Image 1 (cartoon, rainbow, N blue to C red):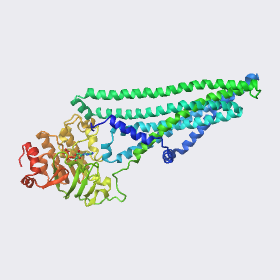
Image 2: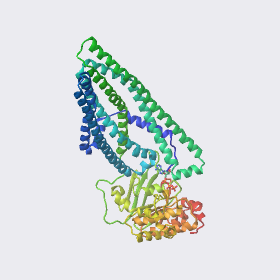
Image 3: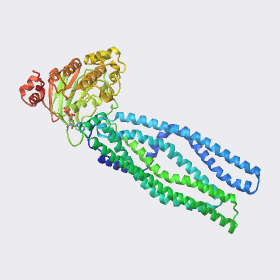
Image 4: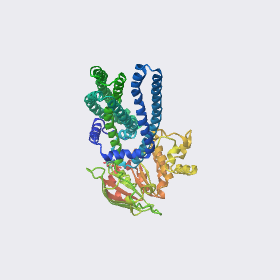
Length: 609
Ligand code: ATP
């Protein structure tokens, strides 16, 4: 978790990216790609399609029968026909609604399944993203994409696609019927329709830009919540007394959000008001022109015909209105798909090569061969690092803070890939290894110990779910934490709290050592916490480390003399290069960087050589 710069800047950039991606570029590839998600459900979709056609056609049929009710029933005073058409109309409506239920069910079934597929695919993809993806991207953005964006897709499938289809069908049937009755009146009806488009275009545009802004605002709000309501974030806020400042920041974004939401709903209101007014002018115009044709010009039109036309016109407003609105939803939907696909398209930078190597016998040798590494273009973090670590041996890496020690060890399990040179494990470049097999052989106890919210047992078994109770206890005994655990009221079933924060730093570290011991890798990397511990905890940790390095190839990023002395060789890293190497005695004799570190850091521990 970082409390780095965030807010306006990041939100703004997000919007820019969005705008670029969204400048509604609806390409054939995009459509084909979207359809590929629908493909597995084509059978269900076909049924939905038929259901939509039938129910839309049936739903408009009663309007057509209205003419017959009036002409053949009411005006002709024929009771039998009147009852027949009324029953027919009711029957058709019932049927149409029943089909609608089936369509709804199938539709949400399809939508749920598509989002299920997408969510799984996205999660699996994100799991494969390199570490730098997670250090670079805002957690809020990632979560928004996993949740709201994919939920949005569901909405699109349930609403947008179906609306487009059913409204188009209703419209087509209405138009055909109108033209059959009387082409002049049909044309009058059609002339009214373009009146919708003028306000729609404007309302759609405003709504679109507000929606985008609201989306960025939402991301920003999620970001703030994620950062400040996390345990470590809260701790930071509290310790620096920033509650009021964070509150103000949140309030500001929240206020902006409310403003945008109101603006968005108002953009729609004006639109509906205009549409509503136009809608009431339409029928009157039809009655007038219809009356004119019938009374003045003797056209062959019945009262029923004119009523049907007016009813059908009424039935057209809804679909036209929807279809025009859908343009906005459609663009928004395409943007959502684009945003999701953008994530899918991010290359998986670190993965097993095609002919990945997976040696049968593992020795545990590590070689750094002229390794250079940079996180970003601007700065080389590691420069020309060369060393060899033989199986079963241990090496201590020391150096000033920020010199690149953690970075160096992260290259071994390929959390990052070298920029130049190579890191070899058992003589094979780690980039040629089967990634899973490689990581299986490397255990890291990192500086920032992470435990999942759960029990101690669950956290331990994360390393090896098949470990027996005895193995687990043996690992904890080795890691010098067993006694502590059994002294807890619930023993191994003690809850560790969010990120393990119910435990002390030293306890967490020893649990994480036990966790790695359960994994039993060939190579052990121990990134010692810089925080100073009291001498008892330090002894406990040291006793935990000793068995860890005894039988394995080990790298110790050390800040304590006791740890340094446990290693066979010491490498001193400064500004990303190895400046000195040797044993403690040899390095002290050099009177260089190591001696300086020794005098300022290690010696104060009060230990002697
Ligand atoms: P410490 O002893 O304080 O843990 P270190 O020697 O382990 O320090 P590293 O964590 O390897 O140092 O960091 C080396 C340099 O790389 C630092 O200057 C740091 O700012 C930079 N750095 C670390 N992680 C990243 C990252 N994800 N992106 C960009 N720069 C990074």
